[in-house]
Length: 224
Image 1: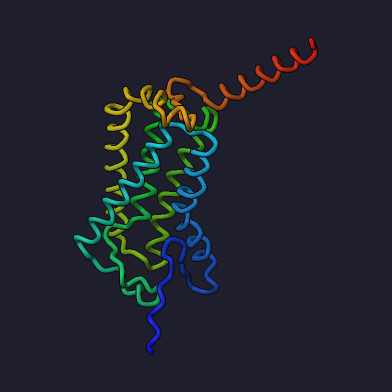
Image 2 (image 1 turned 180 degrees about the vertical axis):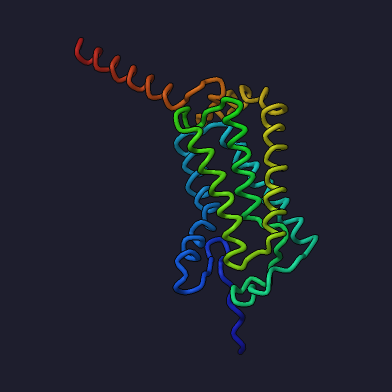
């Protein structure tokens, strides 16, 4: 009985030329979308449960569905390097990695411009520079490693920027008035979902309130 061909999990399966230190570095950069999705947004929901963060993550999922729809419709092949990378059975236009990272970068930047601080005020400028740098490096890595052509990564970047900006407008213009209702819903109350868009620096706000609560608890314990 013939053994069926093996297929790798492409989510984390990134190859580079042996001995190529730059390729090794870019292979890790290429995994940034995975780290953001599994590490960033999952952790954000567990520990923060911000409505803005949830719609941010939902927008990225919508963007990826759009990417897959376009890929299966256009069906543009990957570069010839796909034979060695074992990715010829998937399509290349537009690059999903590039689209993901540029969606992330533009959405995060627009949050900052609007004064919405999911991660605090002090490090916003650094975070924006970091996200755009990672977006450009991810786009470059997909070409350097042979997974995409230049046209494919630029198409992904442009699409990511457009969808990211459009989704930001939709969330903060159309859905934003419903945030209080989400907070007060059964889902919001059960999972302690909250919106801190009106607070300039949520981290400092929570820090100050945690210290105040501790101080108040200590005074009560001493009085007893």
